[in-house]
Length: 426
Image (cartoon, rainbow, N blue to C red; front, top):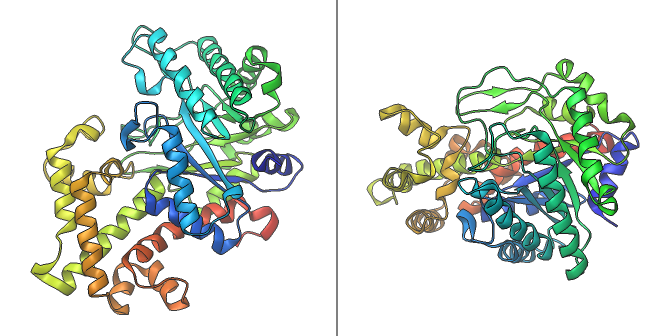
């Protein structure tokens, strides 16, 4: 049974159930996701990697698709999460990582990217060719976007047939939000029009291999949600009702909602109800992790004083010394820049966690906190979600478990929104 196709079929049959997708490569976030799913008996876990994180050149994680598959599998095995309930997805797969090249060059690399993802067993493939390459017009014509997506679909179909992997399901769409949140101040968003959504579907259906079209499960649209460095645009159901009804007569397809990070539980539940049934979260979970790591740093300093690891300051020193991963996103300076580096909702700090200097500093902080465990009052002061879990006995006061409790509190609302139709809006 294909877990994703089954879930979409249930939604199309009238159940208010959805799918939440965790888009992160951080080991604590992935472990949190598995532990959270175990705790709540979730039917499966969907973990997605983006084309910038994981590609044939290694991406910013240093991992190729098969490496990421093995990495996730090892974490699942360590926490005893069933392998058959782990679903891998590829997000924004296309020429995104190579837009500085000509379209021909970028698409050749995208072909390799898709081939490697499918051969590695990724079961959900988001085909995103919405970006302009070096010799393309801006914006890119929708026909060109659809033609390139169809080309990549053909590559995926050939790869799974040759490798014997499960036939992938596909996500399409031309109105794709920027990965990782808006880069400038938010302005009022235009919800995708029903006419545009229907046109996108018709265009792709005409171009896609017939045997693959029945496995297109979602269309990416703009339902009116977004976030930038400091603000969140919340879902307004009344603005999206016409769009919501667009897929009523399209079998097997729901909407996929990107940039749902920081939405409220009520907003997420309404999105699923209105057929934006696939919810993506990325920066939202790594933001929660950063909150936890900063809280652990504060606890360590309160207890150890000058003997503390000085973790937070060491992270900021690396970010200031190596601005390549945030420079194009943050345009502030001085104290305002230092605040953005730490607290921006777009959470560009997530690119820095694998840095050896930072991972060494984190291990030193964790070792200090294991040698001198924080008392309950400090946990309550800095990590109230972890305090509740600690008092219930569902976690210990190990620093990794305290951090994961913060991430799981974010995952709670995605699970509740996705399961509202079968378990009630808990």
